[in-house]
Length: 244
Image (cartoon, rainbow, N blue to C red):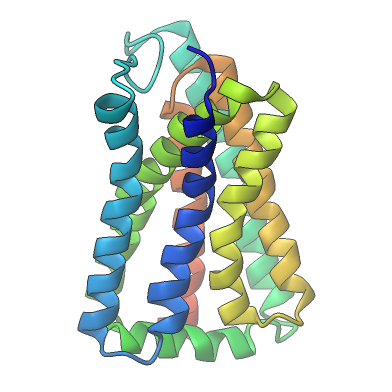
């Protein structure tokens, strides 16, 4: 199917929508009551994750295959995707945790972010270990999969409709990074080099997952890799909130 002007417009919307949603619930409504922030988050995420299904299946009328080209649970392609994704995620997870515990935190680089994290979780009424743990499980499992479905299955594949692979990887990974910039800058500040280092790491992760999806045609490896890295981030958050 040829890449049309309508496809280009929807792709542009898909690239910008998550950043706009994040700005609404995370920045513009930062001082609003928890219920208002949570409602804005729910409505925004529902709109974001509904966009691919509505456009692909109902507007364009295209019946794509599932989230992978080979639905056999033990296919060599799936196993290779899982092995590559888990290896990448485990390396990033271990490296990130060790850097936090033995380098960044001892140097005091998380002192100001800790205050911002505490203020955010208290504002959202998530400052208990139980509530925080539920949030961590949801984000690391469910939300990580939804992001892979959105950014790799939809945005990256739409990019591939009108671009060569290197350009599609670059555009989709920068779009994936953009909404994370607002979150990271809220905690570390726009002047901190860590903000830009961490955002670059997000883009690199997005690029790797796009490449992995292109190579093996399944979301399983990117999702498990994403899950591990998100879990590490929430471990860091737990340590900041409840141990320090």
